[in-house]
Image (cartoon, rainbow, N blue to C red; front, side):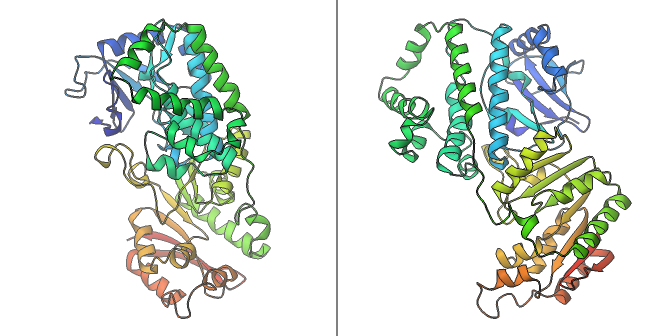
Length: 466
């Protein structure tokens, strides 16, 4: 059964369908002509061989009735991406590398007599730490004399967030989560000081862009668009703009702050004995369950994500709320050309909700994939004490993932727990103790293994859902 993907409605010539075996794309007559122009160019083979676009073939199946409001002319078949993610879950480096991919594809498309309809990071997904362009329907035949339609979208969803992170140290994820259209030039301009206008890229792409949009908004409807069409933009002008932006984005950098977690591996309270027992416990859980998909929740520097891969996992989601820590992990994985570990930024006490049209355009994480094994190490105390989530609800949430679980419980005597509780009123979190935690576990899980770490202040559990 092929189900229409709710988030793919924006292109009138292309609609995505999801099936168990693959992802399909229904095309209109114009969309099919654009696809065949891409397929018959040398560019398609080059990009496929380089792994920069999703593997795609023309499918002989029948079109899906009602998927398009136009007559349907063809169907494409795409390889499946392990887990769909969104820009508001990416790190600075991920958004930057996705922007460079978008610009490179645009430049190479123009050279091949093609163009990209838009410039959205939602068209990019990840295989491990490798970006892959998935919206094949975005390629179209080049229309001479037209301006680059994707420029404003590129600024709102790529450039402005990157500039704010690089120059102001403002995390872009809440902004992109708050608006699927990104950060408009006028909004971004208010966040930059006069001094910032002298930084590379801000004056032209933010300040002047905002002034131009303000001027056009006051003009008669359609007048600005008509003038753009009549301006007869030469292809060379579009190419120069893309090249200029590519140079700008490539130079952007974010100096990582020394957060509480970027130095965690050097400063944590684990003894070597504790760490050895914990690693052996996780290795045994992965080896015995042979999970293909592992979610490492509260992954920190990714040590246990890497351990899961070494023990046989083929796909690992490394999730942590600390942007700087996940960025450091991404940079390491990118340099290694890793294709198994996907690092994402997310607060598990406030995870990505359903967003967009009918709340279905961008889906919650749990609706985008299902893990075989979940690692919840050094996590429970942050949810229960740091975020004030009752232990019973933490356990119920773990059960809702419907997977085998490896969970660590730091006892009240653990130094990190004591640090978290130090700012709390006396008597807060009376439920936070081993006995209550184990009663909650017993109601929803079978405990297949329990092991206390040598320090005596942390306990590991291997769980199977009842």
